[in-house]
Length: 460
Image 1 (cartoon, rainbow, N blue to C red):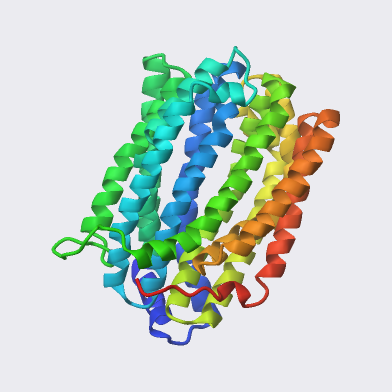
Image 2 (image 1 turned 90 degrees about the horizontal axis):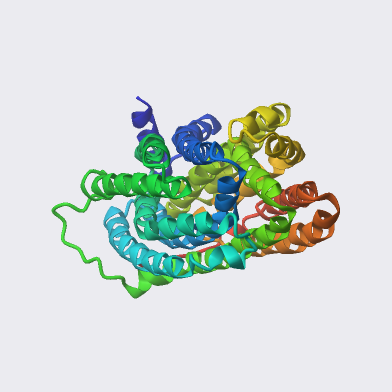
């Protein structure tokens, strides 16, 4: 029934027919709920990894926390490549050019695999020295190296799976990616238990279990998008996987600024690791665990971000700026309301959330303290997350990159350099909270007009 409603409402967008506010809200919810469930499963996988390793002690936990920012950096590059193609798929599906969407799909999978293979090989090469570059100690560096080496080996497979799911979402199918992410979460539980405890591989077992769960779900993602998707399946249809200038140029226009943003954002996270690392294993572990615990609060925001990207992309593909603007505002306010409510839960249950991840009382106490600081930033954090998704759906990634650059490097890192030496980890999280509030206000200001919807794609 929900699938029929979703298809009907999407047809209203694609056919240029009038939509009531109630219909726009219903379509936003129908696309957002599966995306949020996918985010829940992703967050659960982080909780599982962190909690299982947390039972091994503060040292193993700190080893993963040390390289986490670098795993974000590498995944950010490969996800940006996939997004450059998935946004085109959304626009083409909105214009009812499904043959063009399939053409982009073929090229997107090839380009994503090729570029992610480069990053995988790069990660394998630097893994022996990376922990030392990040300021790790002899106690945690061997585990950190093993974790990052195994993570890097699976980068190409995880990236292709993400690309397949992103293009399914761009076509309006949020349900199948959600099911696959949930299945990956279940596999992660099973495989992590096997490798961490039964085979006693510790930190390396966590990386291997996660990598294999990604590999298996990627295989299913590819099968579905290529053989079963109503809009994107290519079975029985001739077509080339060779990248063309028009499609790659369109993708580069989106991916390029996103790569710059990834360097800015993830580079700032690496810088934050260098700032936090001298505080010792307790602070490193508390910081990593608190980031994972906070994801409980912002996962609906990222689910709505994906819904906003699809809704805005398809609306603009159908040349309907008015509907795109409405979808952007609906999803932004949905995200702000939901994350504000969860921030209350985060504030009052911070110790319990930390206790799920670590048995070390010092880590739990410090993590709970910084989480309560962060609760006051969640409302405007939601605005920045979902507004960014709307901009990506419009193919507009340059201005959001400049906003994120200023907030991350000038506000967060600048304040962290001043506050962390004096207040420890608490000082860093105060700087983070100020950054997120200002960033949300700037995104709200930027998206108030129509300039963010000015992107045009050349003929693919």
